[in-house]
Image 1 (cartoon, one colour):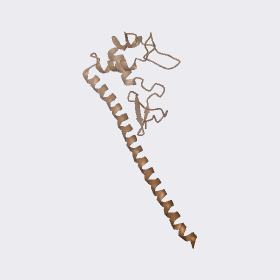
Image 2: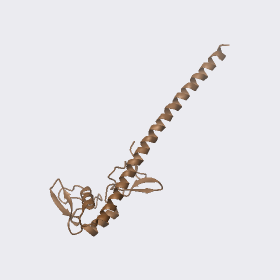
Image 3: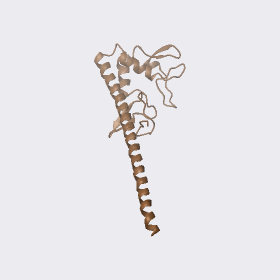
Image 4: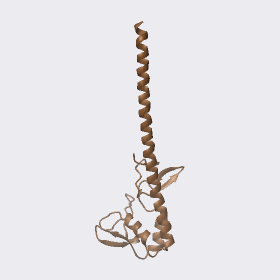
Length: 162
């Protein structure tokens, strides 16, 4: 069973940008679930504004962050200007390895991303475990109901033959 967003009910992937509200996980932006977080955008702007921060493997072209395209109709951002492919993952990979960002900033940004991934994984595992336990309880309940019905039929049979 897939972990789902509490706002849009769509599955939450490990690459999605999530938040926790009242103990329930949801996308930060349900329309663009894997979009950069505001903190990631801020880090790109501060540390990577003046150099290449994304690569389109399909076009074999590199771009600065401000050269990337956006689509006002669909709300998509971080797109290759040539082929319109989403380059968010490329930007994120650059951010976590950029030599211009201080090591402490890179490390902490990576820790935040890893914590979010771990939260999604562990929530999924707990959901799977609870689903298994629920199925076992349902099976046990069904068996008990069948046994009760059988016992009631067995006890009703001698009384009706008298």
